[in-house]
Length: 267
Image (tube, rainbow, N blue to C red; front, side, top):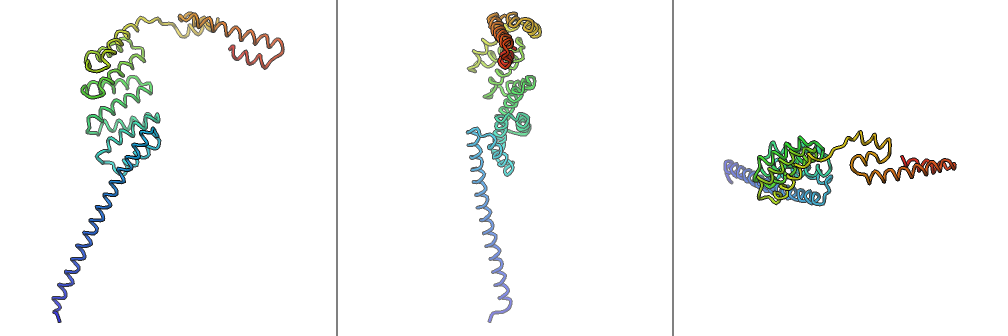
């Protein structure tokens, strides 16, 4: 019969063995769970990218946000945030897109993503009609990332914002910069011609909108003729006079419904 000391050692050995085995099983289970989670994340991101490619922006926004919630510091999280911003642009949710792009500019360590976020932010402001803010973003891309893939595009968009605002000399200057400093760009040759044409913008004839309206109120088509479009003015006068005359004739013959319709068309 064994001694009590020997029996105690046996029990201790069994307990330690059970603890080691339990820890090994738990570790294996955790690794398997981590692998399953990783695969699930990759599948989720793939599904979101597929929705993005199909321009299902409302659904892809949900999937990208779900991914970022569960994996906020993943190696591809910045790329996912940029895609999220593009989806919000596709939905014309400009302020939300600006928030996403702004966070990328401030926190991302990838130069290409910062460049792309600045450019997209400028595009958002451009679509919102905020030319000054758009120019700041485009100029940052062109000056801070001259060797980047978007520098020449940003310079072009910068010049076009001046065209939209009819600032012809500023537009000519920016087109000229594109032609000189981005000579290797396929846009350089076009920019040189645009610089020349934009400079001619200051010589374009201008007419007062209010005066054109007053003239058209006095005599239909007179405002268009005064703006240098005599053919449009003639047809305006012809159609307005015709409908008005038919409206008066219908009213005299007690056809009030026809008179109202023709009168509305004439007006």
